[in-house]
Image (cartoon, rainbow, N blue to C red; front, side, top):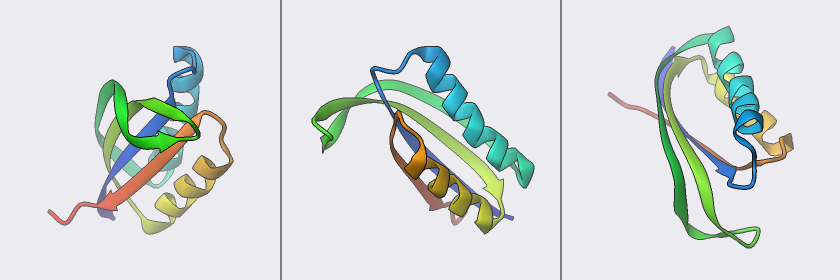
Length: 94
């Protein structure tokens, strides 16, 4: 297993319950073949650039250990899920 850090950016118009439901979907994907080590909710932040005419997003940062196919599955799910603006996962070299 490898160490990863994932940044999830959700639309600010989502209700908290819906956002948590979408985030739980990603947590379940990770926990099927890995483990979550830390979750840090940053809340609403200004985006570096506009995404679909939006200037703010709700950020959640998660560190986890998992197999490489978990990251591919997360990226696939993020593309087809409404309400998530961006998902960026990077490998932690430490």
